[in-house]
Amino acid sequence: MNSQRLEERPASLPTPLYVHGGRGPTHMEVVVFEPEGPVRHSLTSLAQLRALQQGGLPLWLRISGLRDQARIRELCDHLQVPPILLLPLLETPQRPRVDCLDDAVLVVLHRLAFAHDPSHLISEQVGLLLLPRLLITVVECPVGDPFPDLTRWLESRASAVEDRDLDDILHFLIDDLLDDLFPMLEQMANRLDDLEEAALRRPKPSLLTRTFQFRSNLRVIRSQIWPLRHQIRLLLRQRQHLIGPEALGGFQEMAELVELLYENCELLRGQCDAITQAYAASIGNRMNQVMKTLTILTSIFAPLTFIAGIYGMNFEHMPELAWTYGYAYSLIFMTFVAVAQAFWLWRRGWFQDWTAQR
Image (cartoon, rainbow, N blue to C red):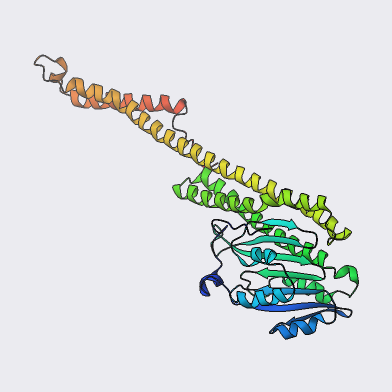
């Protein structure tokens, strides 16, 4: 359960982190699962948290931004969160992980998104900690509500126990983070299709640069998915008592989702290789077309150069030099040779453009 930091961030920093100097402003709120339904409270002090705890109801502590770490640690110490579990939530960037103890489940993921240019990725760390009757989420740099769909769903649901279990919410949060990857992969697939067509029609060196950028992005996404394949299976085998039967079924579906995401990444990486091969083939065809054109010109002008070379010699006794119309005859003969050879090459298909669009 020790902190396992990455050597570098999986992708670029989100824009708000640049604006706020590397750490976004801290905002906290608590969702209390009351019998009438979940209620959101903006958390401003430790005394307010104590008052909310007196009801003995399940709590969801939502922390956004890591600037005020002293305040975060104070709240977590009051909630008796072990420091060994708190470090992976506050230190960035962390490796993707799904770990569990007897009375805790820790999940650290990176929410990936596209920047203004779809060829560039940005990432923010999301930490999830499930304890008895307590769920803590730490989002590095949210813009607005970090989980708007789940928040609206909870506020619109009835207050039945099965709809507010914290293990189900944990499953929904992880599923929400992973589902965001599918539209990204679909958009990357569309971009790669366009690049592959452009590599066949108009191959340019810039295509290879863009293909390499997409391949790097796929490598980043794959690196975030790869550890989850083993760790989710391990979580299912351990039969963590904090995870109920319904949430356990959700995690089993999540394992299949991770496998599907991994397979899609591999398919798109193969498409990147296909674009590189298509580019090399197109460049080779164009080079062959250039060499063929030069060969045609050379083969046509070679006999003309031979004729001109013969009559350009300065021997004294050359019968053709005394002809009155020798110059005209030589031009007509040279034209006839050029036309005949061009016709012969055309019949053999040498003038066909192998690189033309069809």
